[in-house]
Image 1 (cartoon, rainbow, N blue to C red):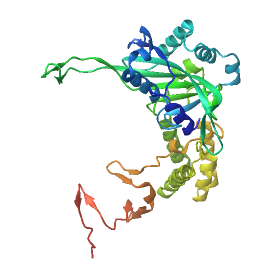
Image 2: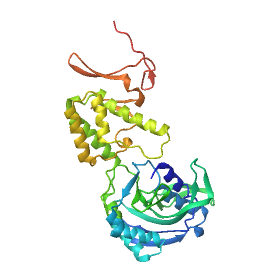
Image 3: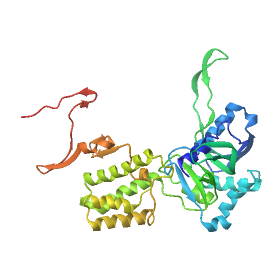
Image 4: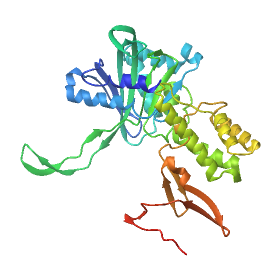
Amino acid sequence: MNEKEISELRRRFRADKSNIARVCGCCVNEKREIISRFDQSLALMGQEDAGRVLGLLRKSLSGTLDRNLVDIPFETSQVAGGEEHGLLMTLRSSQLRDEQALDTFFQRAAQSLELEGNYLILLAFDAYDVPYRSRDGLKQEDASEEVFSYIVCSVCPVKLTRETLGFSADENRLCTLAADWVVAAPETGFLFPAFDGRSTNLYNALLYTKDTARSQEGFVKAVFGTPAPMPAQEQMETFHTILADTLSDACSYEVVHAVHDQLRGLMEEHKAAHVEEPLTVTGQSVGQVLSACGVEPQQVEAFERQCDAAYGTGADLSPRNLVDPKQLELRTPDVTIRVSPDRGDLVETRIINGARYILIRAEEGVEVNGVQVRIRDEQ
């Protein structure tokens, strides 16, 4: 799925636009025990409460593609007869009215989630009459291409607030407000099936995770029957480790900055061109950047081999999971320097009288703790 397709679905999760009639789910305690089940009509909840429920579901389609929203592919054998895929299909085809399928799903999810405290598992079904979109991008509401039927899931922590001092408007006085249970934004969730090319793709699902450092391994295995993809944060840490290990002494500031600058440039060009499909690179394409920086061929080959071993042979990687396009940071045990990503040219490294230095060109506007200072010309 691309960002436009995700946004198209996300816009439906509003009280005045949604066709979702009900939401069902369960409450799970800290022992992973299901302590209650519910099935509620959104129409009977009132527009404000229904809007809050839809907001939780919409959060499961939020964040950055390839970081918070990750594609989950199914093997052909799973689609043909896999247990996990079959359960998701039953939930979808029954419009969440098959009680046995719901019980099975809730039990699997509750036993596999690694969350502290209590949480809710929310499920909703929607049938989207996809409007026809012409080649020039104009949408024709009365010309439908297909009906996209899907389920969306949100797993939301339930937290106990503290007693606090508040003001009662009814009693016109300050008073203590009692502690209460509140539903927080989802930690994870998914969409099934995928909405690829604005059409149904039964071979994919879309996983949401709030924390890009967590893989949700147990949940993914239980619900989709497939290994969890490497988390975005782990992808970046792995990339940094491979660079340092394979380049060794050749891993200079200039080389790392060149890799960062090249990947950041690709992201900026991709965004400016308004390309719908996600941007990806491979270990081999990064290897070409290293070669252009003068890195020895054997080191480039070692880098590419380790990328294949870590991510999969020829794997397509999101550049935003390899470098931070918004930040260029240099760090020593005692000093941290943050540089504007497009001004890495202001930094250089040198060895002076046997000591290693990081040098930063500073012509004007130098401040120390908010105080403007001048750099004197020492004679």
